[in-house]
Length: 401
Ligand code: GLA
Image (cartoon, rainbow, N blue to C red; front, side, top):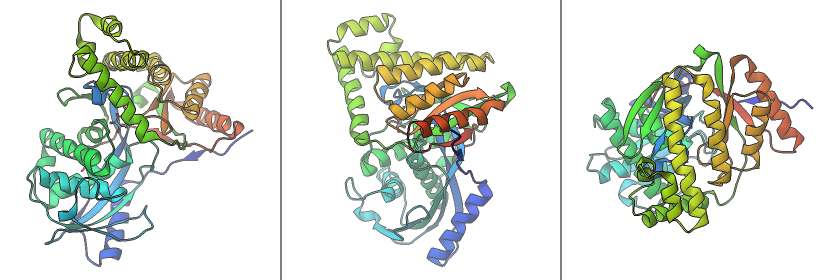
């Protein structure tokens, strides 16, 4: 069987800006003050570590969400999105509070709300949104929406935060507040940091304990390798509840161990065994084992990149996937199928990326094998009667601007 292989579109920055400017002008009968954009991300390794004060290693994608925006003198926000056929939405910023705004609009007005909560002088605005970050693919379309809004508001209200990494860390934290409190998703901070603080050609080593970052050169082409991203297009129910449950389980384990975050276990000279011996809950044992081992894998992964041994990171990717599947229990049939098929087809390593329960997996493959591996994965999905997956090749791109 030879299935069709669907490649996801990516726009040039000019295309994205033109599209969103035209959408704005058509809808609001005025020119925007400017256009801004922010990337989605894939995480190379370090999964479900961010809310445990751990390490993670995302790259920003060339796929970006674009925003055209214009200030208003009142507190009204008018929003239109090319991805949302429902048309124009209107929200009064004075009414925004946890639980008051539904859907995609919450990510945008949530950022304005968070900026105001932090004392920044932000009023209403008109905004048009368009995006080539695939939606629901676990590639952080929500963080891209938040971050594009954040840099747009930063510019039109002259906040000056986007000009420095410190200011960008502040914007990222406010985007997390928007997501946690207004959009109602209890996620950690990896996606927002990836979107706002990455550098072109580099992976972002993010230490979620103190928010510090290191930019690690990441140029796969120089090693004749490529990163194939497979959006499984799998839809899974109860995702939010499962994510919150994982987080709660880690917090309960940390409390039982008398530590602030599980990062302290990974830094503790007594080692993982000491912590596991102290836990009597079998589920918590597995969750903690994943988190602590995964933080270690990030350190090893970066050490291999630093040593120019990119071809050796595959073992760490494979181990990360096994741990997410067996100990953390956030994989699913489709993610496992991508990983197993890609590896059998010769991938150097493969793993799920992002929160799990559907979404995307990544495979590190020889540059001239990308098409063959993608075809093999597409065929495997077709043979099992699964919805056709979609593919892209990821390179490390630049941050929100
Ligand atoms: C989602 C969340 C992130 C992170 C990952 C898992 O992408 O938004 O904060 O927890 O899952 O690593």
